[in-house]
Amino acid sequence: MIPFNKPSVLGSEEAAVKEVFFNGKLSGNGPFTKKSTGWLEENLPCGRALLTPSCTAALEMSAILTNVGPGDEVIMPSYTFVSTANAFVLRGAMIRFVDVDPETMNISPVDIEAAVTGQTKAIVVVHYAGVACDMDVIMDIANRHNLWVIEDAAQALMSTYKGKALGTIGHLGTFSFHETKNITCGEGGALIINDPALIERAEIIQEKGTNRKQFVKGMVDKYTWRDIGSSYIPSELNAAYLFEQLQHADLITCDRLKTWQMYYEGLLTLDKTGRAELPHLPEGCMHNAHMFYLKTPERDALMSYLQTHEIMAVTHYVPLHTSVAGKQFGTFVGEDIFTTQESEKLLRLPLYFGMKKEAVDHVIERVCTFFEV
Image (tube, rainbow, N blue to C red; front, side):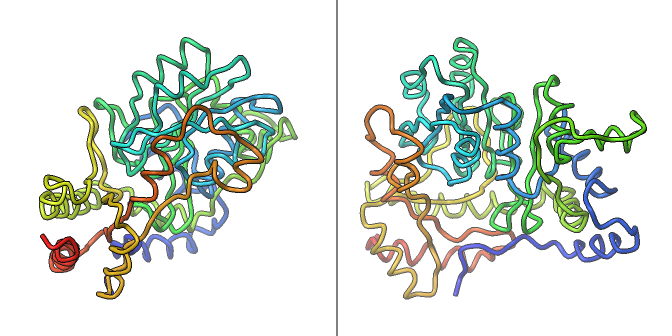
């Protein structure tokens, strides 16, 4: 069986995790946390990076930092993971789902503009498959309407938009280090803070609403409860594994890009003959090969066919506005022209670090055989 995903393993992670035991610091904000956040701040670069237990946690922190609450509206695509919406629903906001651009499956800027009301507080963009949204247009909309922009860059570490790292363009950015992501520690995430005015409060929120970080730095002689917050700090074990991955981020990305390119070249005939659509990369966007997908009305049949040949290909999100909770906590603004239609055609092919050329060639061969190309 060719699996859909294998978590990245370099081989040096075990030694790093063992070092944590000798350091005598298992809880978060230890040496490896500092190394990992330092890497993010230097290599993205960004004003401040905080490790979190997940991208979900980073999104929840974003909702608190932007003071989203009851009566507020937050605009986002319906084609996204549930955490994107949940973080803001937990604060009492109503979600305004909008359509996607079918070429990228990213949020449509035109539909964002049409969804803005006097109650709109924030725009959450999702860089699907590590391909950038149209951030120039989106930031212009946000600036004109005085809105926060949060980048859900869960899939987008090492991707850029016009030379800028995704996650560093909006006011806040969030990353995931789940085992399905390019760079992983099993479960983990990061909050990227691009507005310096938010840094101090973010550190308090991360530390359960206390100023403990200031206490550790010797800035205060005791720490107290200062704000709402939660336990948004991962353990040093996760941070140690993560740091080893971050140090080899270029290696992992290059390997995945090679596999992505093999898929693209091997399946391009399908796109040219109209049998299936391949991913579209807008000008100025450099992606990280997080996934390779194709779109076809024969999606389900193709998926079953590949499974019979021991190839695991998978679908992706069910649009949130069609779900029970989505109908309760949000509304779709405008017409659902592409979101549902395109989501029902999308199939993701196996792609992981270290995938052998023989495996890629086998997938390509079977896909082409299905389409009789």
